[in-house]
Image 1: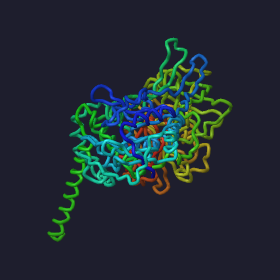
Image 2: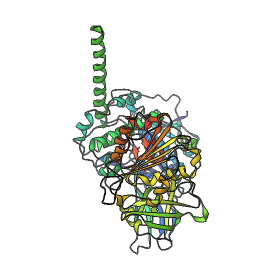
Image 3: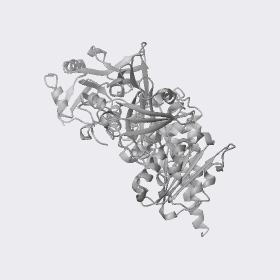
Image 4: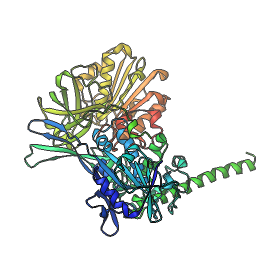
Length: 352
Length: 283
């Protein structure tokens, strides 16, 4: 893998160069504490060191509101809304974010592939960047290092004040054609960054834990604090559920059908006509989300569907922490296992 | 986890695009339930199996999953029957012959007819559960030699709520047919059974090794019907249930119909009891 030394002051030049190739989307500051991915107007506005953006990159591939159909009621004609191909370079993306996109690929392409998603996705290139984990990040616990390069075309690893630029794909190499500021690095060392926030077990063991804690009291305990706002769903980079609605124009002659992000934590999510709600309790909805991230898809794909970005915890108005839930469930699991071995030992000792 | 370039499945043209079909017949079966016969454009066939559903799509209103009620043996047109319970289902009550109606599908995993062929079949229908099961019943009657004895248990709230009354004689009269009806509350003319549907099960004589069961009804019904069947020692792998969920998109994307890790719209709505035993959210 080729690697170049990139002094930090040349980064804006690299962004300027990329802007000659395609629309560049990168993190920008929003207010005092928040960050957002937005198209770059001036390379100097791009923020390289950020903890996380409020919304993940999924907004560019699965827009929060997306038109599916437009129709005329008078003529009873319907046409599908087709996404225009667009070339975009996503710059300064964290590894957990990239991994989330790879998981969305699975959800949108398995079974019935979505044409518009594929169009948006095939026009996208990704340039990763390293980050310093804060108190919410725990991607290492779900198998994603800060320096994980899967999915990226180029990757910037911060070394001191400057960066090492790794070329990962042919497309990445092509993007650098004509960029003059590159000095090759002979041996680019990698150092592992430390995560403060952790899950106590290796992620491979979590499906087994979840096999034993479906009826755990942890769900009730956490549900007592949950306000059911669905912020965890909306900020989650791998949540993709949506609702569909029709909107008519004022003349009631034409309209559109569109979809909007939905969340399994919201009360009416599993409700059917007639009022039956198949997940009417907070605890059931919370549990469903955790199983969706660590068990259901994980059983078939052998990888957690949570990428450890920490958004659901950082933005939860009730202060609910996903790692705390998992770690509490692990304790519950350990106690069950301990009780089992204890019974066995007692039985052996008493000769049963 | 496969990479983007590894996906080679052909892309469905118009995943969310309904086909505009035409209503060719309507009948108001009860004050709440209306029956529709629908014709696809250019003589196309729906191509469903019993137990599958379509997304009915009304422009300006939305979509709802509705079971197909006709048998696949009926060619040219298909039928649905809709109870007025929600937004779309109340609007559709006003639809008449000649009106356009959008259809996506058929979707889901219906009854696998190979599970039923060569066997006695027991149908347990509660309320509007008879609507999807009618597709299976009429298929069996149309291909009579492929199936053994057909027993139909049908429960409704009152005699006035019974659907497809003009077909009951076809379901009842004939060799190897047993049609039993019950209502929660009878009226002065009602001479048949009263009580919940499970009261009909103890009297049945079932060939345990050779009977396949299809159950559809309100969510509350399943547990009790399964319990009644289990007390007759019917094996799980011969019992099939069709579950209701909010199948909004029909193509395994929107997430509303998930039952634990399964998508009701893809893996169901028909599930074998062996599978349901592994799904804590199912019943």
